[in-house]
Image 1 (cartoon, rainbow, N blue to C red):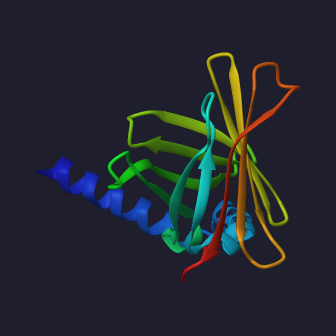
Image 2: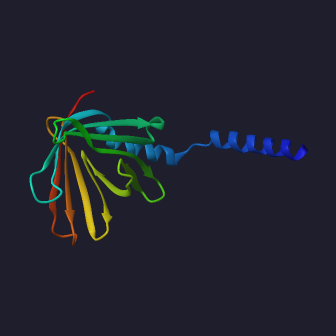
Length: 179
């Protein structure tokens, strides 16, 4: 019992002391995350994806971007709906990701999950109102570029490359702020 009380008292002292220390890393994280503040909100629009021969598949896209943990992280949820052969609305895309700044690597972390069960730990760069994120999947490199247009729209394109030099566009969407 004495050991339990001593442990609890030590844990309390450590927790209280650390809570009173200034956290410069937290300030850095919040400052870096503010660069993405324009993305926060709800967005709706149209996207198209070309995955092989034939016409591009068009979908209605809804992106919900939320600031979390007092600005330390951003949660991104994207859903794409399209008409199937019978005219019924079907979900063709659903992804969930978080974005955060890592003071250790001085980089953005962008782990993302899809409705198909896939996961990527994407790399992300931010320059002004442009965000570039991407990943490698087998021999293929994929990159997405998001820009805020002069009209305040979210415009995103996706390109893929087998050699890192020659890029082929396979995705494009333009979204308007809904909220």
